[in-house]
Image 1 (cartoon, rainbow, N blue to C red):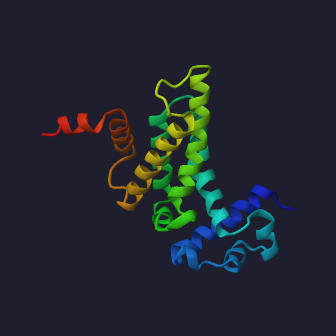
Image 2 (cartoon, helix red, strand yellow; image 1 turned 30 degrees about the vertical axis):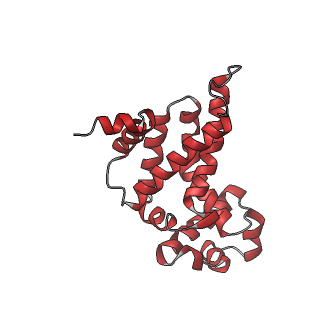
Length: 187
């Protein structure tokens, strides 16, 4: 008997192969299960639909590996790892970023990063209170999660045109400088 993780990975591998051949929204559960060599009910024992499978792929391949780095405050290294993980399966993720709406790669990525950042911010803050009225830890986590997700998605959409280290440096720069500072540094 195969473990849950093995079946999850077989379904993910099948889904990824199909995504390279056709639009993700056209892929059927039957095609996924046929490719994985399992019966249709097996799919539903593991995932609600193909979008939950996609979320599992993004989480396990791209985001889970960076949790230890993010939890210890190594945001730049986390970003480099995310960019490198995306590059490792560039063709697939270029298809994934085309999805729009609630099942988009950006929404999935943002939701997961927000959870990690919220935990990190709470741990770092301890008993301290935020200095600005109306600013909450949740708002701060959501802001940075949206920013990170946006940068990741734009990089993939633009064909991953610069190296992961350069993207991490770019994100660090725009997230630590005000718009006024960036404009003032223009030549």
